[in-house]
Amino acid sequence: MAEGLRIAVLKERAKGETRVAATPETVKKFIALGAAVTVEQGAGEAASIADADYAAAGAQIAAAGDAVRGAQIVLGVQGPDVAALTGAQDGAWIVAGLDPFGQRSRIDTYAAGGYEALAMEFMPRITRAQSMDILSSQSNLSGYKAVIEAANLYGRAFPMMMTAAGTVSAAKAFVMGVGVAGLQAIATARRLGAQVSATDVRSATREQIQSLGAKPIFVESVAGIEGEGAGGYATEMSEEYQKAQAELVSSHIAKQDIVITTALIPGRAAPRLITDDQIATMKPGSVIFDLAVAQGGNVEGSQPDEVVVRHGVKIMGYSNTPAHLAADASALFSRNLYNFLSAFWDKEAGKPVLDEEIGNAVRLTQGGKVVNERLLG
Image 1 (cartoon, rainbow, N blue to C red):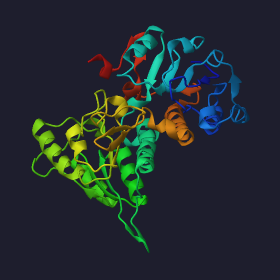
Image 2: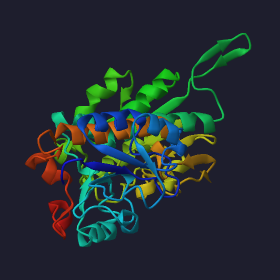
Image 3: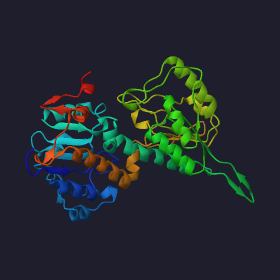
Image 4: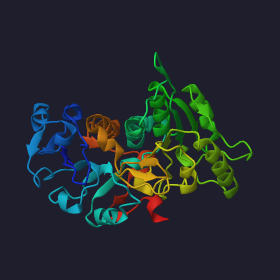
């Protein structure tokens, strides 16, 4: 990369993707660092950002196929097809959510093309990288949206209402998985007036659940299982724990009106949390929102972007939940990208220079090869 770094922002082409990888706010900031920014025509339309807004921020607007010409960094929400990178400089960085496990063949084509692919979802969960973490920023919105959509589908009110005609009982909401999405789901359900309970395989989340005013539901009979994996992610549990958890959930879930499931394990299919037999114990009209549906689902029978009715229970989940909040999701995602690149900006070099800790964590390809240890095992 040489002086006069050029950054390209492409329009997302994946089905249902409404987000964009830069906003006028971050365009201005990149230009202030000394970069030139080119935005593909219509890149921000689905996120309510007009081309004129980018132009006013100092970006050049280019037609499809031209935006990437001469670019040394290409920003995306999802990884672009290699064909869309034609014209970028040799060794150009691709900075996006690249789904390295699910899109491995695409990663291989990046390597073959000589590109340096940087997967933002591989950002280490360390203090100095919090502002760069796309999984956290997008999961936060997903947890909120899951509750809003479940409330909309639910045929009753959430809060307790005392009226002259009688009392409406508060809805009972159960959140399974207390990561970033789960915590926001708890907070949102509480704000809407539901009685909220939550569970997680990580015992450390008990205090977080209580701090939000929800009731923790934990397996007490199996000792010594923390469920804490590398980087703060959950790990798969022993058979003994899974059995105990299934029994606990079965007894609790039958009393719930709303269930939000959020459990994901990086690089693996989503763990099954709710079976068809457990769904059958729930009250007709209850709602389950499966936030993991795109990774195989936590709930038996859930289907992406469809409302499935089983035993009178409505089950739903989006293949891309943050895309249903395009403007806010884009604002947060684009700030994550800016925070990442600006943190390593070398003024003399006029470009970002990554350190070893974060650079090695997010870098998938370099020098024509796949280099990330997580993809080489």
